Structure formats: C-alpha cells, structure tokens
Image (cartoon, rainbow, N blue to C red; front, side, top):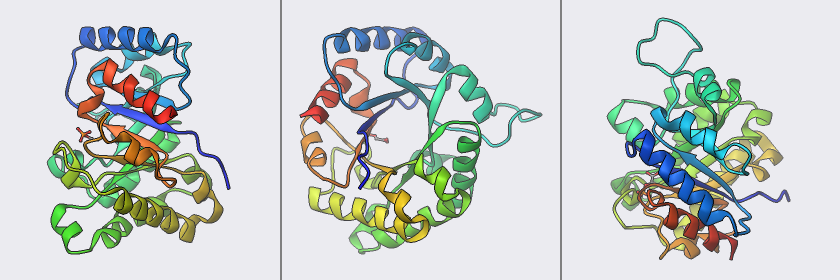
Length: 254
Ligand code: PGA
C-alpha cells in the first residue's frame, strides 16, 4: 500500500488583507524555523494575497493554494480567475467545490467536476470538497450523497489525474459550528470515499489523500490523526492564527 504524505491546508476564506497575509506568513515561517514538520502545509489566502504569500514561501517546503478556480484560460470573462492565472501567481493547489461555493455561488456537482479538470489541466492540485448536510447525515444518506458528489469528478479525471488529487470530506454541519463527527464516523466515511475511488479508478485510490475538514481545532485534531484512512485536515477558523496552524501541524507529527 502506498504511503501518503500528510497534508494540512489552511483555508482563510474571506479574511486577511495583503499586509495581514504577509505578517502571518512571516510569523508562520519563524515558528517553523526550528521545527521538523513531516506534513505538507498549504496556505490558501484570498486571491488578492496569493502572489504575496507565494513570494514569502518560495524556497520553503510549504505551498500556496487558491480557494476557487474559474473555467477557461484567458478571455472575456470579467472577474474570473483561471487556473493559468492562479498558477502564474504562485498557487499550486486549489480548493474546488467547497460547500460555501456550492451554497452561495450555485456550484453543482457538474461544475465542480469541470473545475477539478480545469485545475488539473493548469498544473494545480485540486482539493475537492464533498460532504453532506445535517438532515442527510441524520437520515443515514451520507454515503449516497458523497457518491453523487464524487462520481462526476471521477468521470472528469482519468485515473492518472485522480492519483494527484486530494479529497476533503467536510460534513457541512461541522463547518464553523464547533461540532465534529465521531472518529468512528469519520473513519467509516473516509474509508467509504476511498472504496468509491477504488471501484472506479482501481489501485490509484491508495495514493489519493483524503482529508477531514470541519471545526478542526488543537483540541480535536488527534482524534482525526489517529484515523488511518485520514491523511490530513482542511482547516478554516483555526488556521487564521499562524500559531494555531503550526500547533496543528506539530500535533499531526505526533
Ligand atoms: P472550519 O472551516 O475549520 O472553520 O470549520 C473548515 C472549512 O470550511 O474548510
């Protein structure tokens, strides 16, 4: 079985100016200077700060990511940011299909699949978010919802392309709420996701990193760290302070 390098992703959402982003990254690098972190760490600032964050992260093991990608490469698409532009600005990862994009920007499973494909074509690693609503969880529909969300993505990406993708399992009811699934549920669902990938793309499923996201904090991270099927975390609120994010990375080393 492939060994998968742990991955921790900071999703700042709509927070931090360029100056605040720079101050964060300087502090982050100071904190990491004398620490031996085994995971990949990725910072996803607002698009306005990608370039500035990447300049500071150059020459370090850490990477910059975008929070969204638009379709196309160049052209008359006012306001849009293609994978080509994001890559050139320094992004190497991109979050695709976050539930907030699905909810507020009307992104459906087909659009998410096209975005995952556009990310891959631009040389970006897509971090594809899937997750169920609370009523779906309570009705025992989680696996069915995850399958509906994953299938178009698995069709859009070849097995080779999929091997470099990341899946983030984020129960919508856990995002920003302080509530998290039990480690048993998280293990079962991460395992179910990998089994779905295996059924379509075969052994590359062993290479795909499956993250957990939703109210990850220094208090609960070890519960997810202990789950063999979970390869890291996607962190919102707790990633906004460099100290907390570094603390999470250190906890993942344990
Ligand atoms: P949260 O956000 O950690 O603040 O719950 C996670 C996410 O939305 O990716």
